[in-house]
Amino acid sequence: MIQLLQNLGATTRTSFTKLGRGTYFLLQTISGTFSVLLRPRLLLNQMYSVGVLSFLIITISGLFVGMVLGLQGYYTLSDFGAEETLGVMVAASLVRELGPVVSALLFAGRAGSALTAEIGLMKATEQLSGMEMMAVDPVKRIITPRFLAGLISMPILAALFSAVGIIGGQIIGSGLLGVDEGAYWSQMQANIDFRDDIINGVIKSVVFGFVTSWIALFEGYDAIPTSEGVSRATTRTVVNSAFSILGLDFILTALMFGDD
Amino acid sequence: MDNSVSSQHSLVSVRNLSFSRGNKKIFDDISLDFQRGKITAIMGPSGTGKTTLLKLIGGQLYPEQGTITVDGQNVHQLRRADLYNLRKRMGMLFQSGALLTDMSVYDNVAFPLREHTHLTESMIRTLVLMKLQAVGLRGARNLMPNELSGGMARRIALARAIALDPMMILYDEPFTGQDPISMGVLVHLIKALNNILGLTSIIVSHDVHDTSAIADYIYVLSGGKIVGQGTPKEIQQSESEWVQQFMTGAADGPVHFHYPAKDYVDDLLSSGKRY
Image (cartoon, rainbow over all chains, first blue to last red; front, side, top):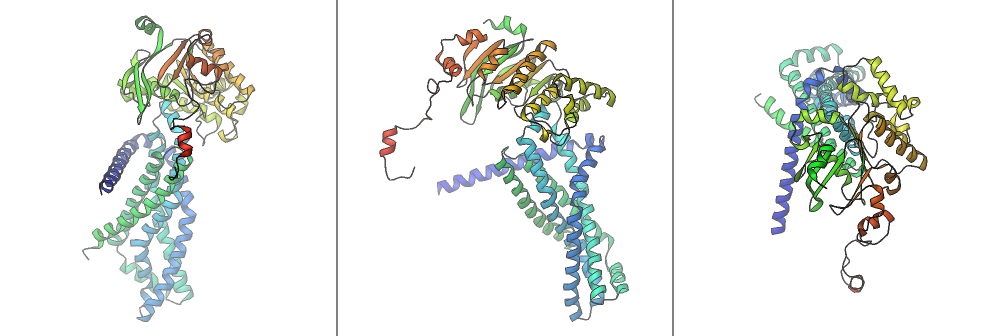
């Protein structure tokens, strides 16, 4: 019993210390924003590796998710003779939920794990330490540009995901199953609200981008500098990001759509 | 040694330093001096915290007790900006080279210049080529770090360390894992750079032969204490059994061959438990 309490205490202490380190790290990262904005080249390079290189996986996944939505939606809606509203159903699911959530999960798997591994290896090979000894702050030079790149890329990728998904739904809905194309688009236009649906979706993806980039960079920075340590950190990034994204999605959805 | 006299000539002085990792005491109240313009070596068995000492001097770690002054400034009381200014005047050569893997050799050497100066690209080019020429690798400027051998990576890192013309260089195990030729090259380079550029060099190493050949003064550390110090000649003739064991590489001595364990016979005969 005593042992159990001791273990519980130790685990709590470790978790809180880590949370504290993570918060301090986040503040340091954010405080570097100004110096990064003075050197936009650093940011652009990172937006390429974090954002552009995730483009393919996001668009292809978006297309398939949209096509599945088109199929499933059609079968359900046609039971009620409401297949004309397929466009609304596809667009609302994508813009409100699937776009931000699935693209954030993919982003964590594609870009987040790569960031953790990169930073962890830089730590293990003394590159971060070396930079410090050259009087260059590794947080400002390495971490902040990557963090901002993640923050900016995530909403763009989520928007792309939703846009491609809507086209996927249309290809299946009107191309294959014969929903009227005009109805698909006009119903969507009439029923998707800019403020309630699109802006809320964008807010979600900004939050997910923030959290995923923070987790990925912190896990890399905090990794034990050995090959085992880095591989564990990479796993933790994907697992913790997935938990955070899904948990936060529930909270955000409750806050945003709870009043309706 | 009279501390007050020696510290006037020393660039780095360490006073009553103690440092622990977990329960293990790495340094126990040690004092060392590193003279200006000289090559001072810190030697000792693996795990005596030689690299830790360099990190303490560079201000990357904080001591539990004691002070470290570099060029008259107490490293651990400096504000961050001042510490960074001090570090611009210190070069450090890491064991692995610590080159930035996403940049070419040229960009690696140019890195500190681009970060800390507002020189034009053409001036940076001239400086980078001069530094690369000094380490004999001007022709390798377009290679990436993963295309370099270990010895070449260290020479490039050395070129980068002297890019801002520092007052001193800290070398972390510069000779480990080198073939005889690149070892010879590094030994020659460290000596030559120290004399030509008027640097102060601190070498952390367990390579007895090559380090003794270029060092002006040697400290031998073991178990958190200084077990011997002096010129290479004095160290060779030292009567301390610690120093003798280290210099001759004897398997058993004050540093035991066996990790602490209970009696061998008792251990073999005790049965039942798996461990």
